[in-house]
Length: 212
Image 1 (cartoon, rainbow, N blue to C red):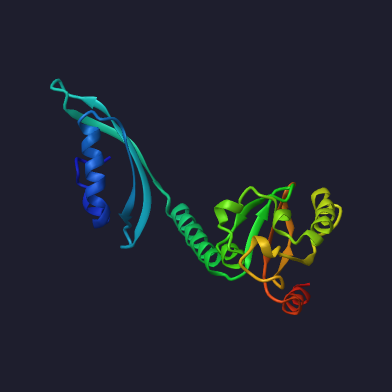
Image 2 (cartoon, rainbow, N blue to C red):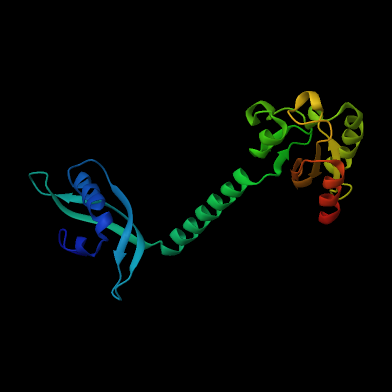
């Protein structure tokens, strides 16, 4: 219990105006308020809190007399959320910048996720490839073998392996020696993820042998 705005000085300066505005809106009949802000601890550091409240009593002139609410320490939640956000940012930076293809397909081999390296390697825009079968981008001589290799992965009867296949030259901006080394691994019952690299056959074989 505290009188009026006596506690507002404990709120971090960057958050104070926002909290004051939310309280004023509540006091003037615009509904309950809920805010997350930094509150100064008795030891001098700031903690994150979630503050909720509403006016429960008015005087005869409809002015607020009493409010009730709750303040919960959410510092741990905020720290976890911030750490997750930073992790997601780092992942996105890696996803966007690596020169190898990072992908995910569904059980039918249709691209669900591709990073920008796909376009750099193949010349095919990511948004055009999403939803298309990866088999459509393989050299005709490799398609049937890759189709058969996909079956046990879908049925989860063997572990994923590393292999290589030619990207069809008429579907890419690269020459006929380009290869894709694909590491497919189911992450859910019917999903696969992996990475791909491109280059001459011998160079790709070295990468594949190094990853096995």
